[in-house]
Image (cartoon, rainbow, N blue to C red; front, side, top):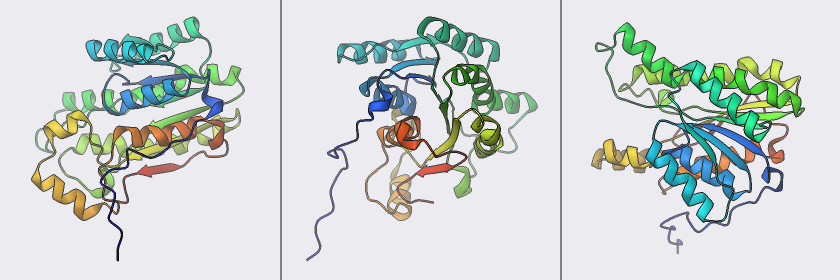
Length: 265
């Protein structure tokens, strides 16, 4: 007799990483979705989290909820990452107020749908300013912190969407495909300072945005057909991989892509 499949993976007992307690972590796009799950996961590990996001109300609520649950209240600011100077200034301010950061999570992105024919040079530039450029300049801004600490971990959020040849967001696909290039292109130079850099590429994660905008009956069938595991991916699943890479447990992992997609790719 075949055992019944579990209906959910929410009852799993997860790891505690002692090396994350007291660690300072900066996260872009931390107010909602996957970013909020990453912020929460680090706070629950005892880390001091700082994040930026455009969603002011959601960010404030997240920070207050984390504090109400007995964890260190995250430092956060409203920031439009399309403006590099503002992003770098917020990182510098966080360093000045909290101290040096040993982990950076480049999470911010938007997978807005568009067609090849609709893209103008202005739209192209705006998409890259959200989905590609912030990661590079956030790394540039925070590396001095990591050098002072004699090491650190940079985690870039990629995507498996472009790897499945999805055709509904070419600019997003191009930007996200470049994340692996960013990771591998900086691994050697950063490694000399014991700074690790890796990509975490999520599959189709059931954030509120994805469920509201894109998940329909056809999508449900695609999940059943393509995933090897029966459960839907949750933001916390991505956060769990990020925690490992930021912790001392991932000390010899660098220049790699880690897919969290339930076996879709």
